[in-house]
Length: 134
Length: 360
Image (tube, each protein chain N blue to C red):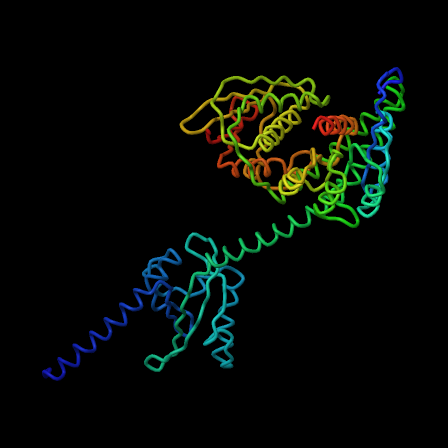
């Protein structure tokens, strides 16, 4: 999103959900550098609250395991709250069951931790554009 | 002069003796009779099979011939104590003991001893039941239980390590980018990230070893997987000077591409490290029957003698660093694909690894 762009599209917004502060920081910084408006949440309850207060997000980066969530129910809830937001899931666990379950629930991709931050930003952009095209 | 009554009685005695003898000879277990000095008087076929001696070889010998030390030296004392005190420690009780065959190998048996009196003399009958297979099965069960616990522990460790690793990797990437590509610290940041990735591989190795994943096999092109693996190797500067060539061809194999990449990358890195980052590694792909055969050869120093028999044993390594899990994991992954792996140190030098995988 260059400053010379003539397009009047609003700044895309992304919600980063992870209980690890450094992960929120690195994703937040990188996504902001890439032109996103970034919000953060450190647990499922806070994420759900932000997704329910009327603001539409374009993308959500969601950790599989949070202090108040250790299964795919949160993803299901989030997809229900904002079906137009593209979801990229991250996990240190990465079993095939979790991956296929998440994809079935509509996650765009499941990424293993540790990830490459720049690849993650690219992935969020891809996910966002793919959701927009739907 | 014998009468018909005597003859009939004798006949019945003979039949009775024959029946008892057949029972003793038919027994699978070993049955041994000794006198009060421990001298062997009877040794059935089961005992011959158990110990590898013929009965004639042991008649007249002391029963402690069939025991390893220290029991051999102690047995005389045990017998004397029983004869003197009448306190039974095994007589009428039975116990697991260690016995020794003619060839010197030891094995576990369950021994039960009964006492009898024959012509006024005390004799002892031992019945020996081979416990080798039961002990082996118990050992296997213990190993399996240990592996399950290991798998659970590895999963917990993996998760607890991977999250901080991810946190650190992400943050250092962002900081590195802000320092700028031309800064003095740029290469340090690259090294930091490389170390983090090494840690991550270590954790992954541990997880793979502790909980080998089930492969999801599909028909794949081995040469394509090899090419990707070679690229992964080249991405690491420490192996930059190693030359890798790939020759041959084969139809698709039935395999899990991700797991195969791990297999070949492990083999490549092993060779590269053995050659200290310089030398040649070659992959040659052919077909043999229903299998695809991949032969990996290198110009390294070959397999050291002292590890040759234990190459695939976990935690065995010749490197100063490393878990020693690589080859053990590689073997498991290959066997999970119904394949085989063989490692040789040919006279011409270097190492030769042969991997067989079923064709699709």
